[in-house]
Image (cartoon, rainbow, N blue to C red):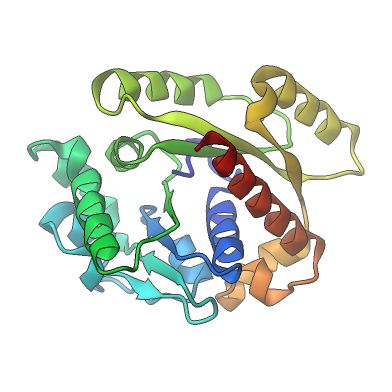
Length: 260
């Protein structure tokens, strides 16, 4: 689960680029876009117009993920459950539902079981959360085992993170005792500024080995790629941003192997 209730930290960018990097290495990856803005769907060239089958139907109507997911045209093996603007009303609709926090978990577990039985199991599943701690994010945290938290290398980087950690503890206590912080990724690193280095050092001091060694630089290419319906890995594979996300993905896989 890629989460941070603070906006503009690189959640969606991190989700789509790490997912694409893993898929390019031959792994099967599923991205569930839970942000009503649908930016992850846009970056992966997945149709998500209003009324189009999406994560909304999965959460609210119990639709089968297999009937909603689509494969990224640029990256074979990368599948997406898109988000539409319909999701913006899901927070309100979920309030009155029974077991409202477990809607995504039930749908995802059923889909994972079906794909594994068919011999098409996923190696990784990423959920791109909205920049809030509402019911959509709670559904994601209840469904997942590990959180990947992007933190931008800017002033106030740790602002609000304590609130996310409190939410994590509440989810563990009441809904998902297996949830843990898998990794923290430093994003938007500007090597020209002393501030970026100071923030990176502060984050590493707070979280230690949970912080990935790889940092994601602030580059124009990373920002440009979504406007072309691409990840930076397909838009400019040799750029510093693309290479950084490839390195981060490799580090995550090695980290996962170490915990098995």
